[in-house]
Structures are given as structure tokens and as C-alpha cells.
Amino acid sequence: MLGFGRFGRALGELFADAGIEVRAWDPVVPVEPPLAVDGPAGFAACDAVVLAVPVAATAPRRARCAPSSAQLSSCSTLRA
Image (cartoon, rainbow, N blue to C red; front, side, top):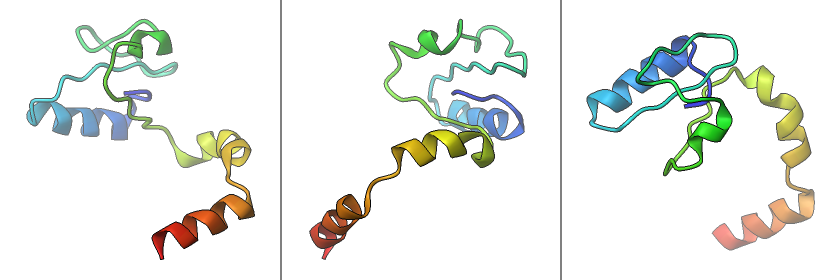
């Protein structure tokens, strides 16, 4: 789990209760062992990574990754 503030911790607890192994890293909030990994590279062997950060923090990256209108049109026709 990238981001382990209030939401990340709550979601991590739900995952753990469901029997899902949880590892976490946060540049601001301390993550205690055994959950802590050593930076984002610590997720290399994970099957899935959850990004649990405020939406505003992801805005610059989302803007760069936003699909063009042509890509959206082709996606819409595939779903029709």
C-alpha cells in the first residue's frame, strides 16, 4: 500500500482481516514493522499495489496520463 495515512491504515486493516498480506510505505507517516517496506522499490515482488493518497496529490500525474479524446472514443465504441 503506497500511502498509509488514515485511509490507508483503515483499508490495510480490512485487507488483513480478509487474510490478504499487507505491506506499506508512506513518505510522511511512519509505518511500523512488519508492515513497513523500504521505499516504493519494496513493492517489486507484490501481486498488487494500492495507491492510498489524497486525490489532489495525484492530479499532476493523472493529467499526464489522461487519455486523448480519440482514445476515449475508441473505448466508448468497444463498450457499446
